[in-house]
Amino acid sequence: MHVDHVVMGAASLAQAEDWCRRELGCEPAGGGKHPLMGTHNRLLRLGERCYLELIAIDPEAPAPTAHRRWFGLDEPATQARLAQGPALLHWVAAVDDIEQ
Image 1 (cartoon, one colour):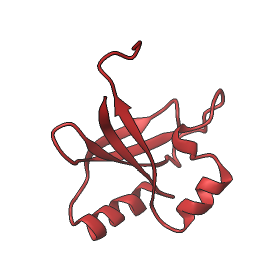
Image 2: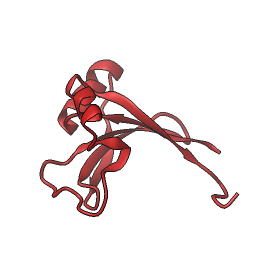
Image 3: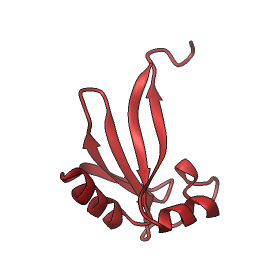
Image 4: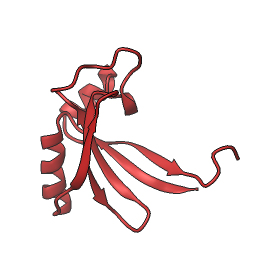
């Protein structure tokens, strides 16, 4: 098992990109939209096997109806936290054998 990626949430993807430029001095690349979750993201490689994910609710996408968005993005406490600026939300592990 190893850390696959670290998740930074933001009130908007533009805010997350600005934070990345200002605080890390680099431009995130790649990413995309997650239609089933109503989110979108940008990515920044941190090493050979790890990256930073910048994620936000996609204002152009409908909200999911069958489930909540990833990383608690629908939670009022998370939304209040992100209204103050981008914040670390989670880390995600990668495993070789998920059954194990």
